[in-house]
Structure formats: structure tokens, C-alpha cells
Amino acid sequence: MMKTSSLLLGTLFILSPAVQSKQAPTSGPVQIDIVRSTRASKIEANVQKRGVGENSQVRVKLLNGHEIAGYLSKIEMMSFSVTDKKTNQTTTISYEEVQRVRGHSFHWL
Image 1: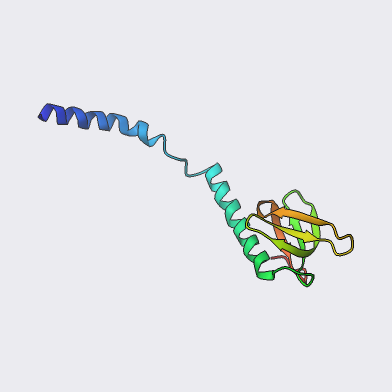
Image 2: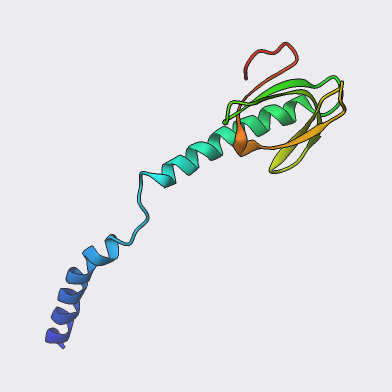
């Protein structure tokens, strides 16, 4: 019985580094996803705070450098829509694509 316990404990100590190496990394892509989610959550909260309608004028700067201006016409869980009042063209934007949003007075949020 004692030999079996010793053998089992020895095997666990040998295998423990192999098991530990399969844990998720604490840096790299995991941290990037957390940062994106945090930024997207902040953008979503700011957009939802503004509400929809022609009085909810925004200017959105995307991560790719493009800017979209208009009013918030639709707010969803993963995206929102901005409609250009002059052309009536609506653009749906994912929160993950947004670098920053400026509101009615066009101060960056």
C-alpha cells in the first residue's frame, strides 16, 4: 500500500509540469482580447447613453482610420447604426471596429 502511494505521488510530481504547461497563457492574445472587450464595452455604454434619434448626432472614428458621421438610428448588442441625415445612408458598425466616438458637441469620448 505504501509503495502504491509513493508511486502515485511520484507520478503526479513528474506530470505536474506537463499539466501546468497546458494552461492558458497570461499574456499575448488573451490580453489583447481583454483590452478590445474593455474598449468595446466603453464604446457601447457611451452609445447607449446617447440613445437613438436625429438629436443623437455622433462622429465615429474606426480603427482603420475612417470616420462616419450622422445620427444614431439603431443600437444593438454587438453593433450600432449611424444614418447620414443628408444622404439617408445607414452604416452598421461593430463596437469592436470603433476607436472612439464624438457626441453632439463632437468632443471625443
